[in-house]
Length: 139
Image (cartoon, rainbow, N blue to C red; front, side):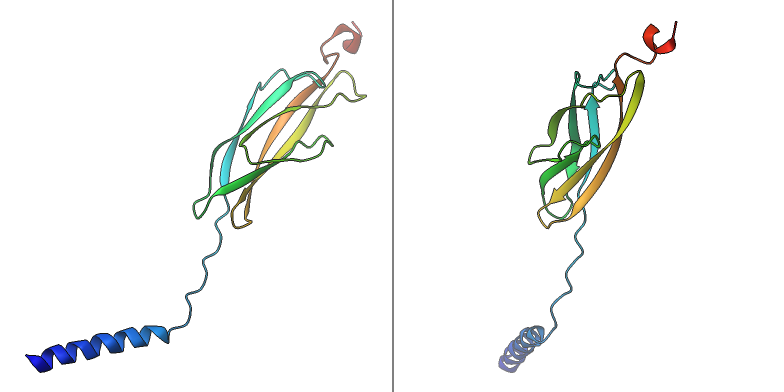
């Protein structure tokens, strides 16, 4: 019985020593974060007048945590970086009249390892007067 115990101890000690010689496990690739863009109101949105609320709904990072949201509204205004999942924006009034402009809003969701996930949302903004107004249609 004594030799059995002594033999078991040697096997365990040999197994522990063998682990120290193994190479490091390869790092796992960072999984980018995800979200869905929600906005309100959807329409009508008037240039220079209507505040639009945007939210990164269901933002999550499977292998870490979301640390910031970077919003690019596609209208020439500076990007907005925030730790909050929601932001408000008023699309600027331009010299254009009597038309609907479509802007591509880009959201970058940034995780704790520097990974980025991207979501886009098109937004239609009316430059007043509206295209159907009499001064635009010539009626």
